[in-house]
Image: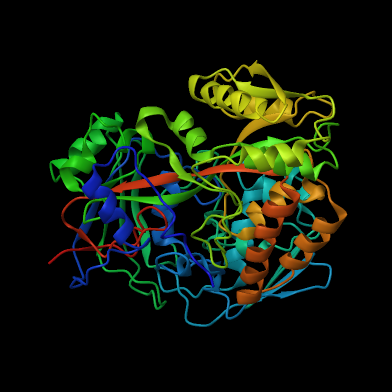
Length: 549
């Protein structure tokens, strides 16, 4: 049975008791009560920043939310509440793509009837153009970490070729060849980098603004720092729900508080801002609007906070007993509270997959609100080796509070945790750099993990497969047994794939314990009283939203 942990406590530290009861009664996803759907009207969006609307360059959450309304993808996720909303399905592809045995070559066949907003048919060249644009030497695309492994990508980047020879487009057939196995490529194509674009769309270092798209909507006007105008694609014949006539996006707000002011005054219907702003007790949104009723929602999200246990060092290498002991000794809810402070943080977890993904099994591997010190001591006995663990932690108040708590809790099982603050001035990159350096002497570290695409491979293989050791697998976990199981799961498709990953998630957490999953960040959403058809994945699905009658 697949569950989304509705019965495991999700105590919201900001909510009054009545609001907590409501939160537990409402299932994750769309608003429970039926409503009449109104077609038409303009949905008003306010954004304090927007990097690009060009698919080859756009990477911010704001840009991805807008491009979701305009994008036509080879594969996609349905506009539905999780877990169905994260089940990979064909969109422009007529079926799941064919893969070579080594998973280096993928062949897509496109369906007929898909058209750009000027009526032109979408053929394979539209996707070949999108991919080649990310390789252009005229720009530095965030997609390069994915597309640079395509055969011939280096020649394009060096200016020796206009297109990668590994990308072949013939009418409605698209072939993409890689220099290495890419078993999760179908899930990659859900990212906005791979949206269909008109063949011949130029490459501009500052990004293209308005251009023809093949999704339910198209951008008709873009003025940086001023506005974006998005309107229906009158030639769209797909199955995605699309109720409003379009979106007027105001880019003039500068402060997060102004975004919320506009929604409360009825001047905007939705705005993107971060969880600490939305959950700030001084703002009082829960007290004003209730929780998970009609305007303010909180859902478990997709960002994982995890403690890395460095398997390349003597303490945790080939030492599953101690790794399991550490998992048992730590109180996840207490760690979550320390991380989030007064503003709250997230939903504690003892597994690596988000509970909102298809195939997730709630196995209750470890208690979330307590620690099992007795059992942890039994497992740790004789396995603490040198008895000392070096904890690299950002010199930032909340991570330091987490580290202090870890130090106290692990002392109970005989581990002396030595804290080593690491400068953390701007972004995670300044902190994660030393973690990925071979031989750097750390045993425990904090990591936040938010994949660019929603797929079990991104949480399991990318964090734990030995082939990613030192990259996304900063814990350097490298087990022949689990490498084989992860790679077998990656070759599966559809329901069998989700089921296998759900089982593997439990197996890894219970038996190998290479990491300590702490929590998935909560994702709050605030909308105006005009908004209906609320689908949360885990934040607002703009394309599916409607205006109330």
